[in-house]
Length: 366
Image (cartoon, rainbow, N blue to C red; front, side, top):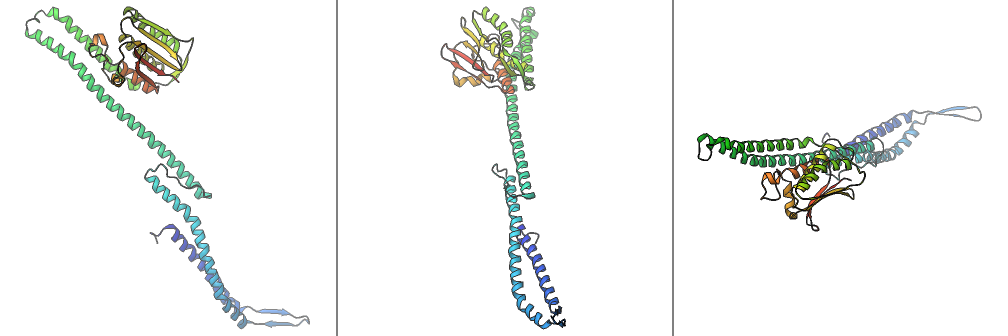
């Protein structure tokens, strides 16, 4: 009986109970009916006592099989309907729970039943919906964590490669000076080169520390006015552009409210502006403007093929391989911008433009 399913078990229990009640009722009727006495009061005030034991016993004996059979049939029918009404929704909930155990997103308990069973089905559905939401959230966080770990590994590999060159050059210089190799005996003339290498290493370490803090950079968003912020960031870039013979165009409205984390947004836009000025062609134009809910930064240069653009967001990657670190930057500007904008949940696009030829960086603010 323990291994029997709910419906047959409930049916047998209710049928046995009703059968016991029917048998008990008919047994009492069969025992008590012949002992009943019938008293009649006649019109002439004559009282007569009648003991119809034999008559009653015969009547009961004839009616008892029909009554017992009909009662048992009705008991079986009632047991079946009652068992089905109780066990049906429970079995449906059990089948849905098995599908939920397999994380079937379409699984749901039928909540059409009333009473406690219907409330149980609705509670299970709410619990499963919350569970699926939590699982999706955890999967998203796991995927994001995996991307972050892969990005860290790639960054460390690129950083180790970048650090290897100045360290090797500095070691070779100092070793030749220590051994008195021809051309390195005049150590006073070589010390400025060593200091330049040390400054280069110091700058790279500073950049690495900046990159390591990016994952903590996404602070809470707050209402800000972009116009004074962008104007402040464009001031040093305007001076650099003038020194390089570039035209710098800034077109902003009187005010433009937006929702962003001020610190990370400032750092991202600063990197984008610095890249635009650094890689613009001499005599070219650098434009900054707000249009259709987006901040746009353009510079005239040799357009980079669309297939090569995504590679520029890798750490220490420079768009022109002929440039050195001194002339082409540290290769972290777009890496910083991508990490910060992604952490803030802002969409952006970076790609070539045809007329005038150059590159365009767009940040959507809405």
